[in-house]
Image (tube, rainbow, N blue to C red):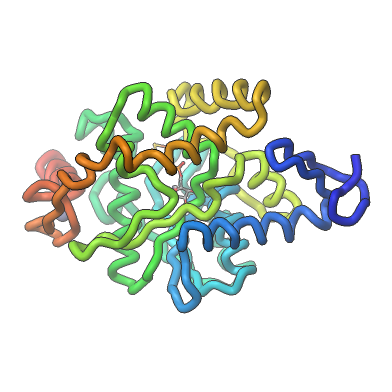
Length: 304
Ligand code: AMP
Ligand code: FES
Ligand code: ZN
């Protein structure tokens, strides 16, 4: 198998792009393709200050690396979730710090245990909600809040095509209209205090971001979150990979088809959502007090 760009020995065959590439040509292709995605969805402009949410995993560190290579002004945010199994949160923090040093960029760290009075494992018990839902809510809250407080104009996350299509499949199977409307590679800022959110890796598969990370020698946390074992999202990813194997490009077609057509069936839902500001913390919410403040209050009442 030969590289389509230089004729050298190819290390990867991107079936859905009908493209084989060697090591040397893969990195520039990956960086260019990210830039194309950024332009296609008008994600980031020159002059933007981008907050990159990093988990210490391959996708978000690769994203920070690429945005940096493309010359965007970036800084990172790591949210320490207080998950101690095998030192998961500490190891992830260390990988994120190490990478920030490597590229010479600032990393902001939020410690959930210190801020809320309990880490994610304890919050699960206190709120009696599924752990990933409390965790997702907490992460979204801090990502937006830190972006607001530190004057970022865009918040970028490392979600890849596999994350996007598995979430889409889950939402479609349950016809969860509220979540479907929120699913997009770019969500605009809202004046009630929501920052613009972008996912520049939405067209890369997990394997493609992994290959970039390996070729660039980026040291990332290989452990998965201990709470993700047996998660439906992982099962859905597996099913989608089986479909992809049979019909190369199906994940991309599923995703693009949704993005191109969602306005046809989600129009009324978009108009129905109205945001106000939390009476406690001022962050945007659909209720009087936001879910994060309600959770924090619950922790206070239990701990005191
Ligand atoms: P996940 O929800 O774990 O699939 O992660 C999706 C994206 O959210 C990652 O690519 C990161 O950009 C961001 N993210 C996940 N966990 C954290 C964290 N602890 N701190 C900051 N950003 C995170
Ligand atoms: Fe939040 Fe696993 S990272 S529950
Ligand atoms: Zn609040």
